[in-house]
Amino acid sequence: MANFTKALHLSKSYGKSLFSTLRNGHICNSRMISTTLYLRDFMAFFDDKKNWGATEVKSGRSWQKDDLRIKSNPDLHKLWYVLLKERNMLLTMEQECKEQMKLFPSPERLDKVEESMENLEEVVRERNRAYHELERGEIGEQPKETIIGPFGLPEEYKMTEHSIPKEINAEWYKQQQIKCDPRDVAEFGRKYREKEFIEKRRQHKRDFNHVIGLLNRFPKMDMEALKEQYPDVDIEKAKASRKYKPPPVFDD
Amino acid sequence: MSTRLYPLYQKGGPQLRVFLPNFWLKLVRPDNDRPSNIVQFMCSMEMTRYDIKNYLEKIYGIKCVHVRTRIALGKTRLEPGRGYVIKDDDIKYAYVILPKGETFEFPNLFPEEKEKELKEQEKTFEEIKKSHEKFLSKNSNRPGTPGWFSF
Image 1 (cartoon, rainbow over the protein chains, first blue to last red):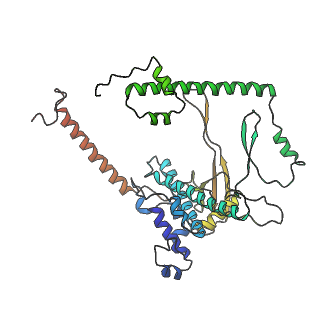
Image 2 (image 1 turned 135 degrees about the vertical axis):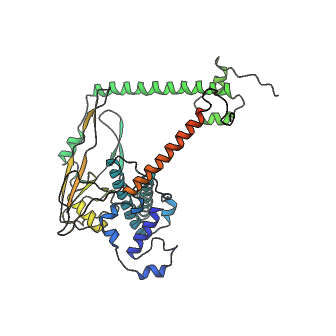
Image 3 (image 1 turned 180 degrees about the vertical axis):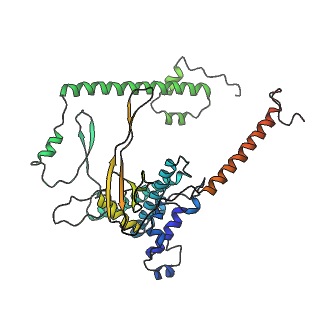
């Protein structure tokens, strides 16, 4: 696992192990900050030399949320930079492969790193939320509001800080005043709703016919599971349809 | 506030610090001949020159004298047979000038030995393919019979 080995490598250089539970703490504490030449060089942007020109590079799984929840905040902070460097390295290699018209070996590595970063951020967000709920009684996320947009549809508005109140903020007011002709908005809304309704009706019809087809092919199907999967379809009504032609059953 | 939202900076306020930066930086092969102390990067569109300098110094430990950036316009082209225009994404390039005496040469990431190995593998694969085709051609006038049927 490239991430894992690199994390170990970097953690050694920071003088504190990310995996102090796995490793002997005494050895790690005795080593103070010592960055290797490899880390300071531009070669950190490239993969290991043995992987140059390889067709496949083996890697482990990504960091899951459960792995990250048991780490301390400084460890997560260090791991973020490890992942960031790994991602930069993979992006560099991918770009060079593209330029040289070669196949980028094991592209799933990029997805794994990105997934790990997402998970890490989610864990940090969780901790943030817990802190804010405990100390301030709010979530600590950016406040949101649902407003009616210029096209008459509900939109999510993310509130941000401003240096002046909105009563005297002429620029902000100008932005808010983008409005369409109310008659056009009304017509758009009518057509939009009609489109939605037609789509919904078609979906319902499709489901209904599909359920009939399923009943015809599999007469001994689990009816409760069918009801659960297609809650909008009335099965009694489907059975009353002229399209319902189940095959004869002989075994009982 | 969340990890990605920073308080509004006002005069006299504390310096904003980024704890989890999500900028990316790609080291790319220079697109034309340039002095060996200039390194070319692709970077995220939001990065400024100061960001790039700090990013390289704090995360990679690379000192740089000066950073220049430019935004390359993405190419536009007509979708064949459709008639609408497609535009590629714009790319931000950064040109980092290294301190005196330091140089950087973009390495060859595809060594010749490995290329040769790959070619040999391909050759053997081709041979196997040919022999299999020959084996199948034995039965070409008796379709449907299994391969072990004839001697």
